[in-house]
Amino acid sequence: MKVLRCPKCRGKLEPIIYEGIEVDRCCQCSGIWFDSSEAENLKKLRGSEKIDIGHLSQKNDKEVLETDVFCPHCDLAMIKMFDIDKHPIWYETCPQCQGIWFDAGEFKKFKDNFAHPKLLSKALNLFGFKKK
Picture 1 (tube, helix red, strand yellow):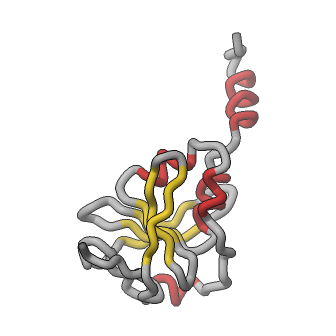
Picture 2 (cartoon, one colour):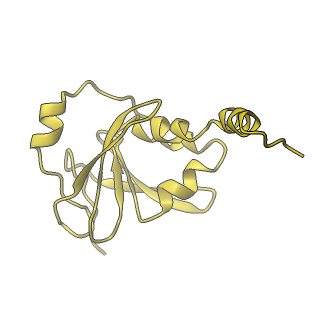
Picture 3 (tube, helix red, strand yellow):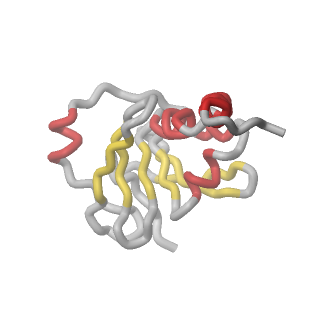
């Protein structure tokens, strides 16, 4: 079995399980690797932000864009993505296996970007849709 390495610091990725979903977290930098659809599934689960034990470090956009990051599974260069939302974050995704890499603290931000049910309710009310 292949030992998975962190695409950022090359530390060992250790499996962690939350509600039956296994992700891999770096022992050194606390970044998290999500196989295809795991981040989407975990963001919906209450308390899943607990798997993200790290804090966002300050990194400049030039550094983010100039450094290639390789998929821990496929060894392909990942695509850098920018999520413009309440909490803008840079993250990487693999074009082959569709896995996602979040640096420490980014999964918390990613999840919080989707945690606005009250906002959705207000928007629906604004357009004349009432909750039944």
